[in-house]
Image (cartoon, rainbow, N blue to C red; front, side):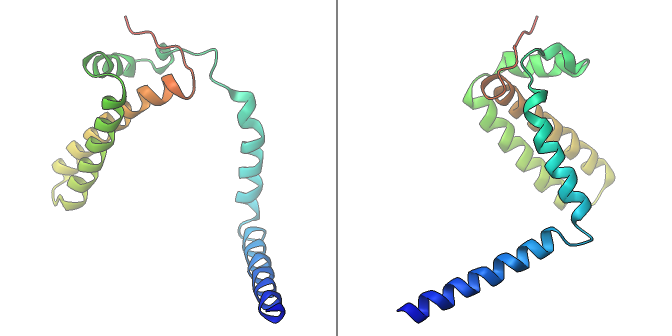
Length: 128
């Protein structure tokens, strides 16, 4: 039992060294430092003082979707629309189909963004 535990620990140590070698290798060092810097700055950039009007022209579309359907139905519907649009883009052979699919992906993400911004990021939510 003791030998098996020691061999498992040695394998785990070897895997950890290999993962750290990949994470801090010469090719990945820049992205690792950038990710660490962004994660250090993220708490400072809280969205407590913003509102929906900061999005500019997209506010009207987002408010239209929000006024039509609200709550968890909006989030689930946005996910479904985005997934169906991704499938349409993957199966489309024409450029026009891919453009319309991209529009529906954007609408799906906009629909999902409303509940996320309201519930998780506590952004004030005013549609006039």
